[in-house]
Length: 97
Image (cartoon, rainbow, N blue to C red; front, side, top):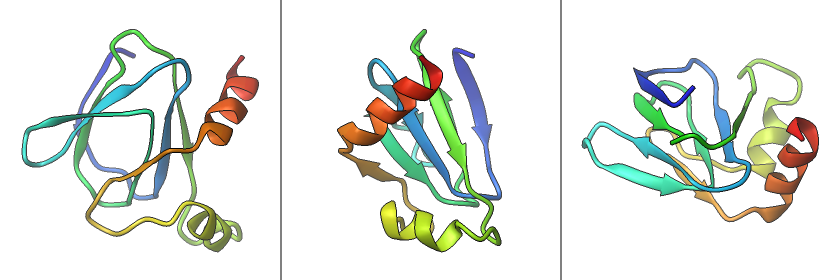
């Protein structure tokens, strides 16, 4: 996947660029560069990984781990939350490596 057109997920998603940043576009049409980000459920966005390796973690809102996920990765509805979290990048590299 190089580019994913505008779409909406029903669950919060942790996006991680394993070896470099990726880009997200929100409703305002501007692309933002991110290394790690949480996209909350219901937020329309497009994704461009520009040839990079990208990992995602979806957490169902009703799952038993949803509250722990939200404590570890706080996010607001309607807004992307950018994270500076080298530990999560390393964990994703280990998983996908």
